[in-house]
Length: 138
Image 1: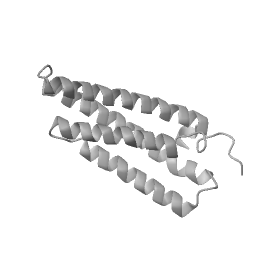
Image 2: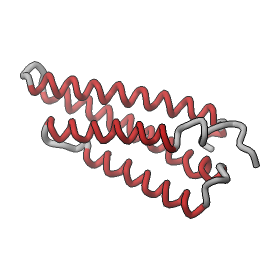
Image 3: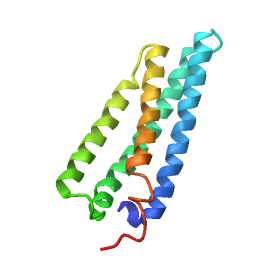
Image 4: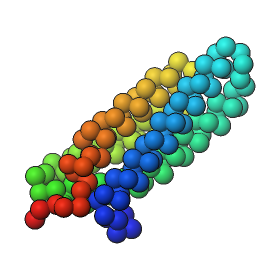
């Protein structure tokens, strides 16, 4: 596991990262609204989107190092299923990263909504106490 963290510690780190990402999403949406209303400069939004991408990339690197070993430890998943789940999940990360390079505020809002949905799905399926827990029975 990443830096030999316990599953509970990893869950705490990932939950904190998700909170930070949601905060950055909200700032991007607010800046897009201000830009559309003529009250913000495009550079402000570009800078905030760049910060969101950097935070998302950092989160993904940590999560991707962590995810496969943790899911393999959960003996109710098979190795083939885990491999497919992780591959699909990583591809979602890559697609969102690519899509954050948008040209319009409408496109950005759609990507931000997609990212928000992705975080909710992660928390429901991967980053829960059902999967990341210290008392895994072997």
